[in-house]
Image (cartoon, rainbow, N blue to C red; front, side):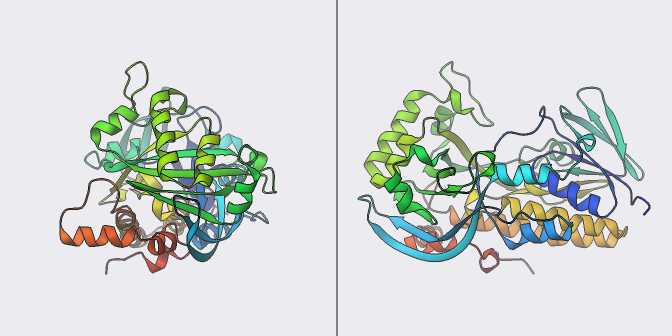
Length: 408
């Protein structure tokens, strides 16, 4: 079959890989350009799977693994004494960033994945676009897809006024070998998502695939996150290393000051269940994730198109980052294959509605975090979303369609 055209994808993480797989299945010539050297390392994140992720892979003709993660049968909320105060039944597959990344990466031939290509600029000419890279390479292609994440260089070039907005809180994160956690704790938390409440935010955790994507007992990892309110001054303190350098895009785990970690551990002992405190204590190297979100007003810029977190970044409470990237990519591939401006316009309109809904849902879920609500409506919303029964049912729900308020 004759090629449908050439596509350059900027960004070799989830969104870029999904886009490449989907477009290759429709006979586009595709090349990925990733700024990092070699394969990406584990993103350190757990992922709640949704039907959109599986649908995107099946549409692209990718044969799925028998198991894509670990079954979670429900959610439990601990009080600060370690007693279960609330339960919700919810079956869901919880997987890891690393497992999905490695699975997708294997679908792309080595000759079509180009590392150490940092985008510098773009130029447009009729029905083509040229990417200029810092290493001196220039690539001219029919279409260019910006799949380079929340700090997208493609977006900086085509829509420089759209920037991430700090949400007023950060997340402490951990990803550790389950064998480092007391077995009685692992047994109690296995096959479910666990939650704990503390002033200024909640904690959650669950089991994910371990090294070599192992899913069997004794070889898994435990993924956890603790959201904590932090104003701009506190954020700067958390992201400043012992040499006084401020890492505004996020501080590497090994540079987080020991005194900051010690304060977090002491707060865990004071506010969280003993089971949760043991997990945090067992995590030698926790890391930090400042919470940002933003919405794009446009996705198609002549021959350049934004997908995934480059287009919209919703807060992680929605648990839809990978699923959204998958459907962004698979539906875009279908639109481009029709070679019809109307199809691309329809795709843009649909994904703008979805992206805005996902961002708003994330803001709703995080409404009791960050700056304290002052007006009655915001207070009522914050009180609703911090209820145990709401928090357990809505966070990273297995049925996000229930909560996404799509515009007409």
